[in-house]
Amino acid sequence: MWPSKNKNIDRMEFLLTLRRRGITDAAVLRAMDEVPREMFVNDDTRQQAYHDHALPIACGQTISQPYVVAYMTELLELQTHHRVLEIGTGSGYQAAVLSRIAAHVVSIERYRTLAEKARRTFDRIGYTNIDVIVGDGFEGAPNHPPFDRIIVTAAAETIPENLLGQLTDDGIMVLPVGPRDGTQQIVRLRKTPDGVEREDLIAVRFVPLMPGIAKEL
Ligand code: SAH
Image 1: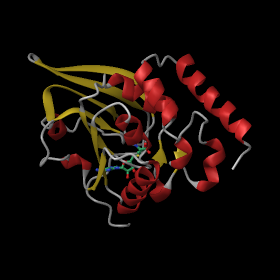
Image 2: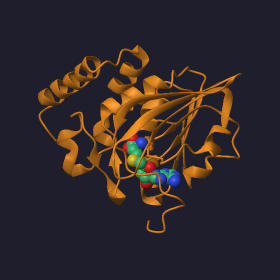
Image 3: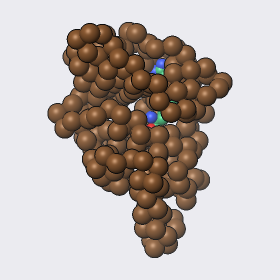
């Protein structure tokens, strides 16, 4: 642990960086301020919890960069009654941020180890409106009613059409699309009465969306 003075300065700097990079939605900034990112990173990177970059977590995966978490959350235009589906629980950090704004979050992870760890973290902090499912995100959560919003936090090479079918009629889906070894783009898809509108936004790098539940733990 670091001296508490540094910790506060780190957290102030963290919010300033998000604002400086263009995050303006007050609910998103409040959620980013509220969620203790240090609870979601590995012990050996805790000192860097409030730096604006991705960090390694178990199973060869990463906790996303805070700016990208805030940016994708802002793109979702969340309302307090919304039910959100996340594909790629990872550390649980993105789900935690969503859960501070929306009514309920269902998050799917293909590694049991990560899913269980994220559940424990939510319990320790006291976040009760997040359900973590071990499963294949390509399949989504077909037994649940349609979701108002879907966020995918691993890169898809093409849009998983199946997931669009699990969105409400005016739903929004945000995801990185592109090659697994290169740069991807954040894409926002919005369902409208006339079809699905697509916006291609910033360049990012995410770990790839992999088919099936992980055989390793
Ligand atoms: N949202 C996470 C970051 C996720 S990294 C966070 O805030 O920490 C991407 C995650 O997606 C990894 O944990 C990876 O195991 C998971 N993933 C990849 N393909 C998947 C799939 N088909 N179904 C479910 N999870 C998947």
